[in-house]
Image 1 (cartoon, helix red, strand yellow):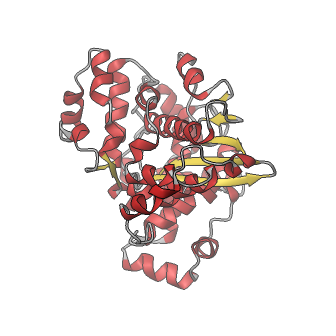
Image 2 (cartoon, rainbow, N blue to C red):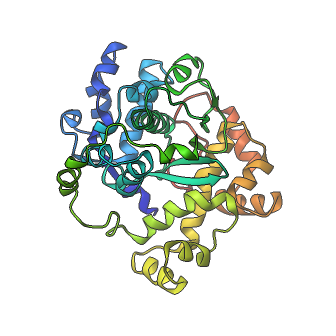
Image 3 (cartoon, rainbow, N blue to C red):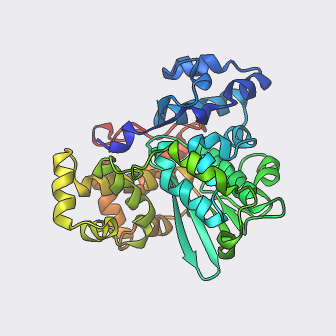
Length: 354
């Protein structure tokens, strides 16, 4: 079983849920009870909750309110303060780059499953965002990108705009809120979720920084290295989520990326009851199911995103995992009624729950 199923996040992710649901005549407490979450969760921001369950609540809320931009709306007023102690430290870093580096480093203390990875291309930086959890997470990704955009706006100042905001989701029925919150440079059905910025943004001074407060804020998190106690399987899943399209997701390359030997990687995973190839297959399953159900990409494009050598390799791999071809799976997905969480359940004995 994927280690990502045990990941948690701070209940601060639900801040504002009750008020937003009420504005549409929906009882948030009913949704929380339906998923097994405590109805008082919003009042306990530092309580840890299962990531998959919180994602499910957000999807249910979007369905109940009839707003497919629910996650975006929930994140509109958020910023550094929602990150708790991490936000306090980042706020007083001297530059935008060092502030964002603090957020990246300590992010697991806020959300175990949320990953932000920087990719540099000449004078641009792509901040790719992944949520390492199974199940539907359209609203969670919208919320993560909107919160990230808000934080960058706080750090960079009111005149800042991203070069582009990319979302893998299909365009919502009404894009006006997305354009209001994220700007007009939007691309839906993108290859990744993330924000494209100019590299020199990270060199700009942080207008909120007050150096005198930095030592006090740092004491809130202690001196332990972030993620030091993470399971090896979780660390591997984080790297796989970012490197999958590169086609270089061998055990040796992943071990090198983590700064360990391949032998250490294999032995540590075995001690945890996991195997590298199974983690790789699970990462590919997540991407394949999302894009096949989304209908926006052809099989060749999905093959590239999985890091496989070609369409025959994709078909062989997919049939082994699901018992059907990618085309057959997609055809079954098209036959289902439109619903945020519905996916085809073919050969269930070979698949995990969605």
